[in-house]
Structure formats: C-alpha cells, structure tokens
Image 1: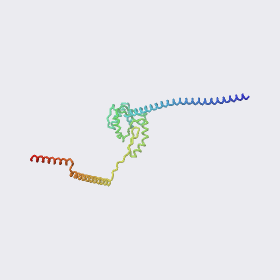
Image 2 (image 1 turned 135 degrees about the vertical axis):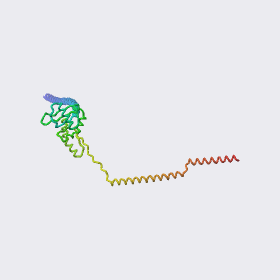
Image 3 (image 1 turned 90 degrees about the vertical axis):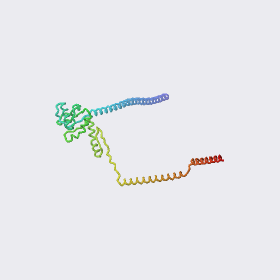
Image 4 (image 1 turned 180 degrees about the vertical axis):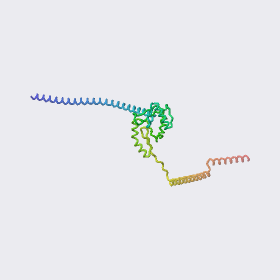
Length: 273
C-alpha cells in the first residue's frame, strides 16, 4: 500500500510540474505571438505613416500650385458693380464696357485690350457684377488707380479674388481699422495685413541745452590750444639747449684741422732754416 501511495504522490508531483511547465510555455508562446503581432503592426504603421507624410507633402505642394495658378488667372481681372444689363450679345457687351471705361476713366480701349467679359451669378432684378479680364496687367493697374472716379456714382469696382480670400479679407477688416486708429499705416495686400508701425518724430533739444553745449565746446577748444602752446614752448627750449652744445663729430673735425695746420707750419719753418 505504501508503495502505491508513494507512486501516486510522485505522479501527482510530476503532473503539477508538467502543469507549471505548460503554463510557462503558454505564457512564452503568447508573449512571442503578441510581440510578433505588435512588431508586424508597428512596421505596417510606420510604412503607412511614411506614405501619409508623403501624401501630405504632395497635397501641400499641389495646394501651393493651385493657389499660385488661381492668383495668376485673376491677377488681370477687375470686378465692376452696377453696370446695367442691356447687352444683346457678347459683342454689344464688349462695346458697352469699352464705352463705359472711356466715359468714367478717360481711357480708350480696343477689343484687343479685353480678353474676356462675363457676368457673375444668375440674372436678377439688379444688375449682376461684371468681371473683365484685360490682356495686360498694366491696363488693369491704370484703371484700378482711378477708382476714385466712381466716388459719386452708382458704380464701384474691386479686385477679383477667390472666395476664401474674400472671407479672409473680410475677417481682417476689424484689425485693419484698429491699426489705423492707432496711427499705423495698414493695408490689405491679397490675403495678408501689412502694418508699418508709427514712428514719432525726433525731439530736438531746447536752446539752453544747445548754448551750454556750445560753451562746453569752446572751453574744450581753449584747453586744447593752451596745451598746444605749452608743448611749443617746451619744444623751443629743448632746441635752444641742443644748439649750444657742439656735436662730437664737429669737434673731431676742428681738432684734426688744427693739427694739420700746425704740421704744415713746422714743415715750412724747417725748410726756411
């Protein structure tokens, strides 16, 4: 009986050990599987993230190109408001616009100066806005500079902008007004607000300060003159001292000359004897 019990106990222990091993292997397997799955997902996520970044960059570049092209297509346009809709054909429409521009801006145009004319929106009781595309930017600028000619009339004109630019300019109107109230020079250029800060004029000093400054300058000039005179006096003294002293080279010359004279006299005396 004891042997049977011992064998049963040993079998039980072995089963427990096997259970523990199975559990550990199961944990290891699940960890490895989860690691593999996460690594696969991470690789795919990084790949998709890279592709998404490339797509975003492409979209941004395309938006910039569209922005530039849309700006360029409208750069020669002007929008006129209040022009009556009495045209019967495109040709009569062109004739009316050419006459209207000559009447209010004193600028004579031909058919070659106009690329396209069109109305905006559906036909209503009020006259629709008229978009005119000129062949050159110079004609558009020349007309737009004379927009004050329409001040006391039923007509007015604006530059042609895309819808989002109009909305942005409308949102910037309040800020534009505030900057001008501050005294700054502010203008709207396309979809941006350009502000140049107000600079107060330089304040000049009063006359007493100027007179004191002049007196200070005179005092410094007088002191400089005195210093120059003192330097000149010391210079003359030094020159007078050096003039009284005989230089060694001159002294040697005189001594040699005297000795030569004495030698010549002695020779002449000896010859006479």
